[in-house]
Image (cartoon, rainbow, N blue to C red; front, side, top):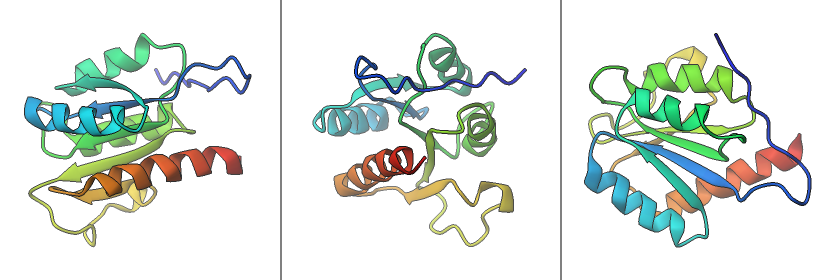
Length: 138
């Protein structure tokens, strides 16, 4: 069952938050530090199931979900598809250290951003800025 989560547009809306999903704890921590330095609230998950639990237990959708492509169990592309359907106003991005470009990208994921690991902190800032701009356009 797909559950759509909407963002509250009131002035009292909660702080923007980002969900990071990667099976490597060190990568999660590095990204978390970078995003917290931008003033973002960050939730992390080391598996698809933990990521889905994070979404299920929040009243509001994240601004951004950043997923590792290669994870045990449910991979990042499958999770990107699920979250794209469930979180239509959330920017979804995937990252990989094994894939170097997105020319092979599945047609149904053309709206999902792609980052090649390692990437600079500015790439995260750009994703956050794009996610905010996308919300303003709606």
